[in-house]
Image (cartoon, rainbow, N blue to C red; front, side, top):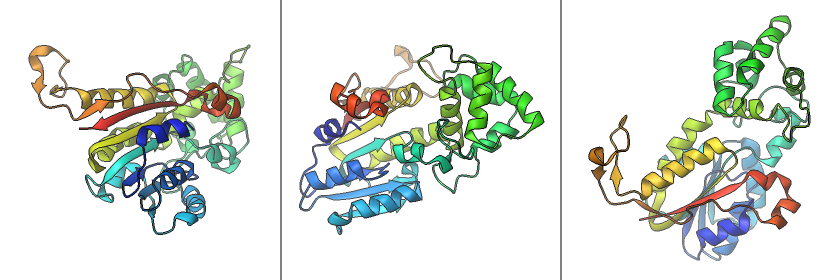
Length: 301
């Protein structure tokens, strides 16, 4: 998604190194390697082993020019040398392959096990969260993901799990639909609860916050950092991170951002996009799933 816009931001060039922290099926990775031919290099990773297998196959034509690892991008700063990259990309969220594979349990539109783990190494599944977490915690994660009926849905789940455990995506979606009928709403009532469960299972908020700082360390001065987000929560984290890096001061932890507490420092980055870049009408027509995509870009100073 936003491939042309991402390449325009990164400006891949011959002889430079790049990082793709969410390579998925390697669409962006292949484009970066192609644009930086013949000697540009790429570090690419993904926590999903099926994505790594797909990426390895797709990138065969660029053998010798890339390193591919199964790992979470939050830990990639321990692998990629500091200051070595001319550009980096994070394409966040769940991939189309993951959504379309019923056995992964990400989608309420197909029946599959309540899993939602992006990596098999993750210790918690969506089924465990739904069946074992206190109703107050379920309501909290739904509410934090923007679900206005969070408590109502959490209580409906609690009532149903007393009779039988939740095991499948369709079972959970049906429970939510009974409690909060669609009644002509644009989005399915299961959209936000499912998204909240996925974020929780994969600890996505903590991973993103840690990963953004780590990726910036990989970049050389003058390099570009591009991030594609898909929901308001992760976009807010990225926006706040980029704006903070572009400031010429720090604020002590726990303090409100007021002039008298600011600690001056040189800015560490420059905003390239003050507002996110959105998909074109042509991309939206070709790929409706891109409707939520937003691209933000900074340059490291």
